[in-house]
Image (cartoon, rainbow, N blue to C red):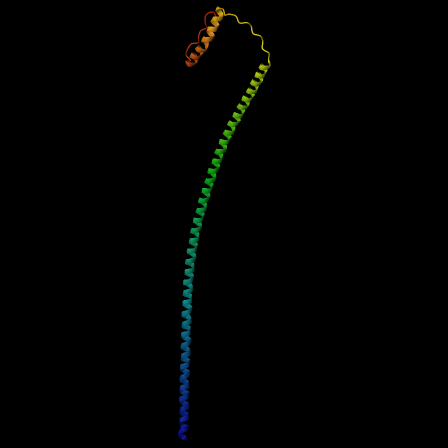
Amino acid sequence: MAGADESTPRTDEIAASINQRVSEIMRQAEQAGRQVQEEVEARTARQAAETRLAAEADADRIRRAAESQAAAYLTDARQRAEEYAVARQQRIDDLTNELLERAQHLQRRLDEAIDVRARLDELLDALSAARDLTAAEGRRTPEPMAPLTPLDAAGQQVRSAAQELPEALRHRSASPSAPAPSAPEGTA
C-alpha cells in the first residue's frame, strides 16, 4: 500500500495542478469574457450612439423638409387666399358699379316720369279748363246776329287779302328770306 500512498500525494498534486490550471483557465476565460463583454458593450454603445446620431440627423432632415413643405404650403395658401380676396373685391366693385349705373338709370327714368307727370297734370288742367269753358259757352245764350249785308268794295278787298294771307304766310315759312307780303291797296 505504500505505492497507493505514494500515488495519493501525486494524485493530489495532479489534482491541485489541474485545479490550479482549471482555476487559471477559468480566470483567463472570465477575464476574456469581461473583455469581450466590455468590447461588446463599447461597440454596442458606439453603434447606439451612431444610430442615435443618424436618427437625429434623419429627424432633423425630415423636420427641415416638413418645415419647408409647410412653408411652401402656407405661401401657396396665402397667395390663393389673396387672389381669392382680390377676385371677390373686384366682383364687389363690379356689382357696386352696376348697381350705381342702374340707380342712375332709374333716377333718370324717375325724373322723366316726374316731368311726364307734370306735363300730364298741365294737360289735364288745360283740358279741364277747356271743358269748363266749353260748358260755359254752351250755357251762354247766343247774341242775335246782325243781318248780312252785301259787301262793298272795301269789304271785297279785305276778303281778298284774308284769302291771300295764308298762302303768303306759307311761302314765307317755306323760305325765310322771302319778303313779307304787302297789304292790298286801301287796307291800311
